[in-house]
Length: 529
Image (cartoon, rainbow, N blue to C red; front, side):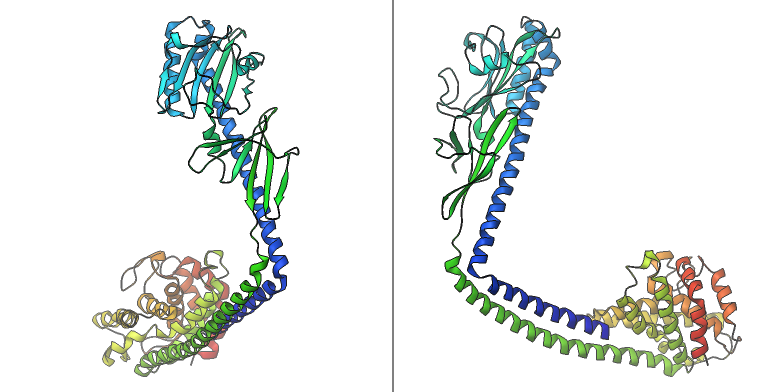
């Protein structure tokens, strides 16, 4: 328990020291240091956000690329291309496929297949209410002069064209004018590797902008700045910034900065993504911050000192109370039986020796801590407290007990367990040594094979402390003389314990005992009378 007190004081002193060090650091750095650190943090945060946005954009366009390949490589699409767009059955299948795809992927406002003449053979439009529509044949358009068609027709197989971000949709489009958009297109080839047309995905740009953090915008290849307003609409303005480097930042004013980086969304195709933020002016607020910090820290330290002092007094009283309880309870059993006092001291010594040896086993390294051993030392003398309830005619009988008398004697473990458990429950005690004492008292006559008493617990159903003490109690019983038996040698005790490995005793604990049994012999030589 003294170790617990030292440990608590050490933590308290460490806390006080750390608080003073932190306070000294805050005062030392001053206004310039705090401002610089804040600016550096915001700079790093902006770079981190840009990096995250860059990866998100790459993944976004990778998903779009995957969609193109997915739609192109479906068997019905391939067969429709191979038929030179003449098979009505495959056309119907492809229309249904694109229709269902558009229902799920609402960010595509138009999906179309264009033949080598530039005319659309299939087109799916996502209307303003986000419901797809298969465009009737009479409304299909000639896209021969569209930039995305001409560029895609010049590509090789598996290459993709991505248009610049732009606005000003032509009248035949079904979306609103001046809504920013972007097109992705790839050439279609037959199984004979003949170019048969183009697959085009037209996308709402708002989907792209929604994956970016707040205060972030995109500069397209044509120099336009595109960002998402709070109401979800798109802001599309001419750029006045020079983002000529691949990444960096531009100081707009003393407290305004734009960080930017370029993103290669597809080979040879780049966008610039940038974030705008303001630096808070900390210098003017630093003095106030220091004053407030001094006041708060002083109050906090005073409270810690008061609480720590009260806790110290309470803990010191608790240690005294715990020792008094242990002493009083152990003395009850000692006064009933003159041999019990020496037995208590010997078994306590054995249990500490055995617990320390068992701790060397990796299985128990985290279980048997210094606190565990300390609690075991305090709790061990309580194991026979239940004998205070056994009649003298049985407890002090010099001859061997009858079967009936032995049955009543066995009741001392339940009686002792109930005494300690009632104390824990009634007074809501949380001291770990009392819980351990109750476990030892109630279960130290249980056997590893389940043939012990009072509950017939088996294996690891029995607590570790009870399994340890069971061996120590048995060892002392073997070595001690009784009116009905003679004292036996250490060698005989070791032999009997080894023979009961896995039966009466836990094999791990027997193994630990065999590694330290010489210490038991020394202990009994010093204490056995």
